[in-house]
Amino acid sequence: MIDFMEILPGRQRLKRVYLTLILWFFGRAIQAAARVDHGVKSEFAAMPGHYTFCLGAFPNGPFMVVGKDAQGRVRYLGSSTANRTIHLHLMFKSINLLFVTLTLQESTSTANARDRLFVSGDVPQACAVVRVMDLIQVLLLPKFLAKLAVKRYPDWSLKRRTLVRAMVYIRAVAGH
Amino acid sequence: MTDLSHFLCRTKTAFGAHALSHLPFDLSGMDACKPFVITDQPARDAGLHNLLTAAFKDSDMALGITTLTDFDDIEPLYHLFVDKGYDSILALGTGPVVRTAKRLNLAVCMGPEILRSDAGPQQINRPLLPLAFIPTLPSDGCETTMTLVLDRFFVSPFLSADLAVVTPEAMLGAPDNRILDAGLTSLAVCCQAFVLSGSPLVRPHAATGIRLVMDTLLPLIQPPGQDELLCQKAKKNRQLPLAKLTLASVLSGYIRSHIPDLNTYLIQVSGMDMALALIPMLDTCKGASPWPGKLLLPLTDPDRYTAVPGHLRPEAAIQTIQQLVRDLSWTLPEEVSHGDA
Image (cartoon, rainbow over all chains, first blue to last red; front, side, top):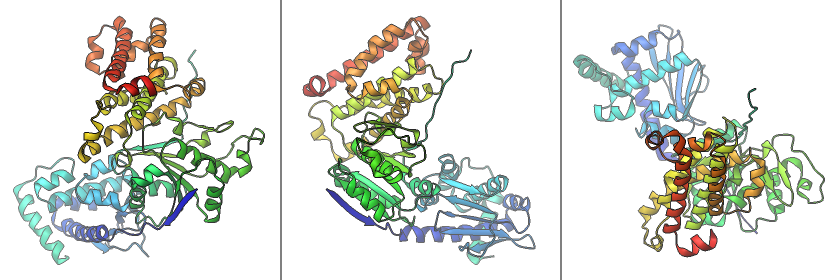
């Protein structure tokens, strides 16, 4: 006797909307921080020209694509990976796992230790991108939340904690 | 001369929270995109198929979910699997579910005639379809061995599951005798492997299995009558220790694959009998090798281990197991300690 049913599991629309919004703001914040924060600036300076990386969830996203243009400026290139040469993929193994990380239930380093994401590309650049992500989280989030997201909360100067952070917020909202 | 040791474990084991969310990715890594789920009525009644469906959302994979009531006849399953073009098998359940999944895998890959009792001896010499095992209860560990016992034995590394996903969310409530049997079976297998196997590759798995059983078994066995009083929250609190005990079962299965003589013997013996048989075995070995003494470390903790002088450690290990068996006998309802066990 067999009881059989075929299910197409479908999509998690609310999670997708949340993650798309977060990645959109995160991408713009990276673009902003690369201009005003020396830590993020130096990480990108070490990357080769025209370097593009993507952070997202396997297999259907959402994605965040960030790259350096011809002038060496860091740009948020949107959420589509189509028709782009992407040098580094940082992919969470499922949308659920990306959600766990971006709702601060797990820090990036813990997610990495628990094998939640895989990297396709150069390891040194991947490490640089993870460091950039940590810096952005510290810049965007209040201390009590950022402590959940990063392994060690950095001891920054007052200027970096206030002025630079405000600049990143303003530029991220304005898209500059 | 150095002794020769082998250890082969084809199964990737995932344990803990969100372990199921890794499953679609792991399956796609094995070129599988249409999994066929085999489950049983208790798992279906508990809605565990919904848990699986949630884990596969956004994965673009369609799931065929079959709930079995008759585990003997796999012909309808075979036709369903082949006609609808499935390419991998997920076994959501314990013993009979996994056995059915392995039989189906054999039938699909090697032809259904391989399962006929009059078929001659055949070697399983090529990989079968991807098979993932999601246990819902602790068991005797047969699910993760390389064997399939029908009216004859099939033994091949390809019969092992490719993935074993042990997650607290997938744990069903289990009766005490089932937990006791599974826990003591795992303990006995792991202790015997730790002391007797002579393999440095088996011992870490055995030590982990022993530690998991010692941490979880006694708290899981409730005093008589308390089961009825358990509220929903208390049942949820039992899921993590149950999952740890299930992980110990999974590990004992890997170990049993490397002790074939023990494997045939263990099938007929209950966990309590095995734990009792373990004590004279350790007693016999304690003068001949250092391992009965070292067994004290996974059985207790580093503090206790270092506090006991070296020559007294084998006796202390035996006493620890005796104490566990005594505590379990006290805790269990009478019909379980004297009847089922």
